[in-house]
Structures are given as C-alpha cells and as structure tokens.
Length: 253
Image (cartoon, rainbow, N blue to C red):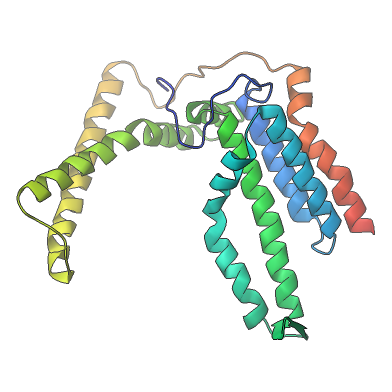
C-alpha cells in the first residue's frame, strides 16, 4: 500500500478515537448511519440526541467544532434540494411567515437535512480520525473484494501524480500564450484531456509491468494483521449501540 497519504479531512492526533482500528470505525459509522436512517422523521428529539452523541465522539477525538462545521459544507447541494421541497411537493399547505408551504414537503426537507447532516458529520469524524491509507486497509480487513481495494489504493497513490501532470500541462499552455476564453478553445482542452488520459494509461501499464516483474499475481498482501481486541470493538461500537435504543424508542412512540 505504500506510505501514508494525508488528506485535508484528516486531523492528526493521539486521541482514543484515533487509536481505534480503522475497520472497527468503518463498521461503527455504517451502523450509526443505518440507525439514523431507520429513525422516523417525526421523532425530532431523536435526531437531537444523535447530534449529542456525535458531539461526544468529536470531543473524545479532540476534533474542534469549527473544523467539523467547515467540513459539513460538502452537503450544501443537498441542502439546496431540500429547500425546494416545500415549494414543489404537492399536498396539504401551511403558512410560514406569510409564505404557503407544503406540509409533506417540509417533512421531506427535514428528513433530508437531519439524516443527511448526521451521516455527513459521522463520515467527517471518521475521516478526521483515520488516515486515508488506514481506511483502505480497514476495507481490506473487512473483506472487500481485492480488485476494489487495489483500485482505491492506486487512486490514492497516483491521484496526486496525475494532478501534478495536469498542472504541468496547464503551465505549458499558458507559457505559450494560451488562455481558454470561449467555446473555440474547447478543442485544445479536449486534446489536452486526451493526452493526459494516454499518459496516465501508459503510466499504469509501466507500473503493472513493474509489479509483475516483482512477483505480483493479482492480489496484495494484508499488511495489517494485528488482531482486534474485544475492548477495541466495544469502544468503536459504543456509538451505534448507544443510538439503537433511541431509534427503537422513536419507532414505538
């Protein structure tokens, strides 16, 4: 898998959450998201408790609230979609500040915002406490098909390489006086994209041949074979297990 690759969402630290095995955190986040999704949208109080649980995890991981809130900006497109629902969804109407809004649309918007925000927040906390390489190793430990794990691993390794290649091509175009100012320049950009694809493909062929010459047979060795203790699993699963009774209560009330 090679050396670790830092990413913008990762926040270095030595908290207990950082120290948990990555595959246990992946299972915990998946379980938490499933519990949140299964909660009826009418149980507004339940989503407040879920947010409190995530806040406790963030405090335990020493992830500042400002860091978490800034990363939540990724869900803005979903927020924009949710804002439109009260205006376009048919059904019973209600007046809010003199504006007629759809009641089913309001509930639908709340459902998307509440569950989407909690899911994104849980994912951000996972990324903030787990290196990208460790996430790939976690997927490998969970038994994800080897080709998918290898593709993800190479994407991480060579993503920056391809980006640098694209940046050098852009510098070369600008040094020759080129500036994309309209449709008539799309042909040049398309040729650049084609050249980048060919270079990337050829690089992949060379890397594959180099791996085969070193004994690669289609599978990568499992680099992290340390056993996971019951205490680590219990610490990781504390989040979804704490959220589960809230979901059950919300569905019964």
